[in-house]
Length: 240
Ligand code: ADP
Ligand code: MG
Image (cartoon, rainbow, N blue to C red; front, side, top):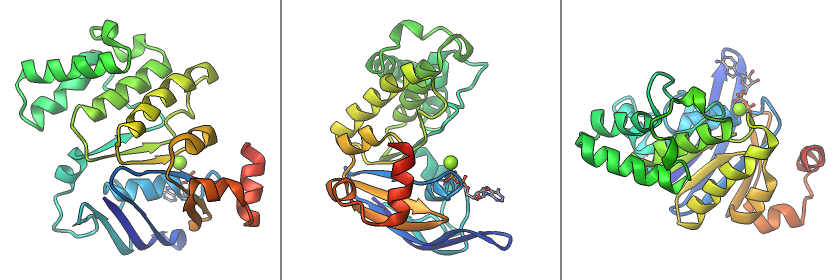
């Protein structure tokens, strides 16, 4: 589904991604972790073309993201992205947040879009909040709306960039629960997160990135059972 090969990226002289290669097969959940500033957000943004890269190849369902001929806006509508800070439209109600792109981009009728939006709000436990505005919801609720909004587009894969790191501790579980549900249903997911419980629970593989380099890319069991790389040891020692 997602194939990243030999990706190099520079900000001026600073190399933020160094020969990065990994992949996410259909139905796989890959967790990406690593120290702050290691290039996790940059890597995940490259996957849906929010950031360009200088060398290498990223293919999403066979479509080369780096090819200037690729229709990136179209590709992005088929990849769900959830950010740390929710990024809901503040001036739209919750249900409008879920319907606007369905109507404008997928040309769904208001009725169809609303039915889909309500079903997804129900699924994330927020059907009662449809008429409210983002500012009236807690962080955990807003993030669940953001996930529902991404799902409304019937994405072929979902990208998460630290979806729980801006949340108060008591709200983390409600967001992770939604993500676990998605994973169990077979959604293809690439998740930047330091929630190692989530990783152990549902990840098929764990990628550890340090200073722009993919240092480890291993099945979850193996990643946690034999932590031999000193850089991984140091990192996990700090967060576990
Ligand atoms: P992470 O998500 O792992 O914390 P990022 O991908 O956000 O890391 O950033 C990786 C590195 O690239 C950091 O050192 C950051 O300062 C740098 N960086 C990120 N965006 C830019 C930019 N637009 N211009 C220059 N440097 C950047
Ligand atoms: Mg980041």
